[in-house]
Length: 266
Figure 1 (tube, rainbow, N blue to C red):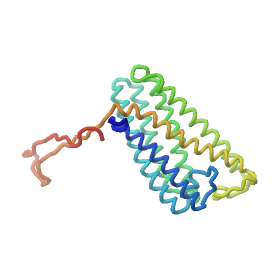
Figure 2 (cartoon, helix red, strand yellow; figure 1 turned 180 degrees about the horizontal axis):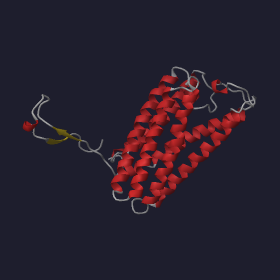
Figure 3 (tube, rainbow, N blue to C red; figure 1 turned 180 degrees about the vertical axis):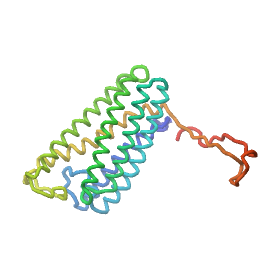
Figure 4 (cartoon, rainbow, N blue to C red; figure 1 turned 45 degrees about the vertical axis):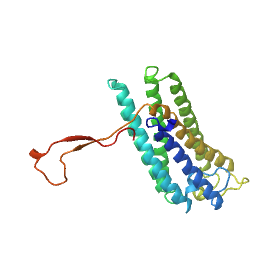
């Protein structure tokens, strides 16, 4: 049995691979069509002009779905491992809520492009990466609370390292973006897709774009730490039939049946 066939480990793996592919494919398409500069454009700029905009949107929507599935399974796993620890259960619920908000933000990014509805796009980015960073913090705290009984200390330190990577990327991007869009280097820079290295503000632009790519991949890297955990869990759905047909039948003549709908991992 391959590693991705164990439990539900394919979920976080699929999330990371598919999301990374959505960035890379839209980037390659935008470069080939000369819609952006080859040297580290904003991720959002690579999904602004058709046809890469269509590819970017549909792939990120699927990423959001995979994110919801991954975060829900993580929630169920933590709950099953700590059924009587109220502190962990509360943090676990908070983590799920934050995760769902982050996935909703990803849908906003996918469907509201930067050059069309900039402020809506920024709200989506804040939900995805800002709230997503808090989700990572909550999961890191949960990892700390569950070690060494549930898992080793190593996984906590790995998640903490990725969280610090994500936080430093957010700080770097925030500061460089404030400098870039402060008005010192001109106006309407949001619509600007091509930069000359000799232009004023080019350094701040590069720092901002590198920070954004770093942020995106630090966020995805966090879910790689779920793969080993997800090898230890599987889910199955059970359907409850209230009759042998779909006709309206008096309840007194109905015999409830429990039938296994899906066996094994889903």
